[in-house]
Amino acid sequence: MSLRTLVLVFFVLLLIGAWLIFDWQLYLDDPGLIRDAIAAHKIWAPLIFLLMHAVVEILLVPGSPFTVAGGLLFGTLLGSVYSLVASILASMILFWIIRYSGEQTFILYLHNRFERFRKYSEGFGHDGFRVVLIARLLPFAPNNVVSVALPFTRISGRDLFWGTLLGNIPSTLVLSGAGSLLATEEIGYFALIIAAVSVASGLIFFYKWKFVSHK
Image (tube, rainbow, N blue to C red; front, top):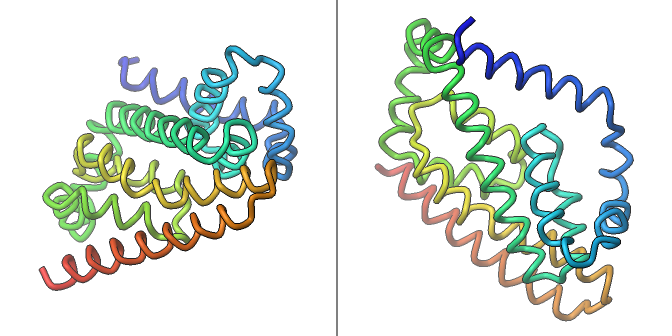
């Protein structure tokens, strides 16, 4: 068995085991439980939170409740920074796992078997940053689904990194701000964040979508 196959098998078994052993829904329903579990480790809380957030997204667990918990723990600014770093780290690790383990097998098969998929994939390779940015800005596109789907295309790791960094800023600020609001009840500050992020993300999305559609 090749190393690529071993990586894929290990990852699949890790996913299955994590979802069978842990009751993720309990934490997804109550971000306060995440906060309580981490808050006890005061000195190491930022590092624990960052690693935990990254790991759960690698395991394809929705990261939104953890971003809210980051706001509860650290406030809007620091919570957003930690969550953004964790999300980028998780996306890049998923990219490496899928691209490395499947490049010579199922990814190659998809490109050889489906002509339309190959054309879209190659297009993503030429215009990857805009594709990732738009996908991250779309409110109805689950972050984990995007992170898993993009490595099947010819998109580059660099475009994935920068597109994820910029595209995840609006939603991260909003969710972290929501957590901070729950902790401090600063409704005016949170409303300002919502307004600023909504306007900024709307303008970016409109500009990029218009640019791509007329290209």
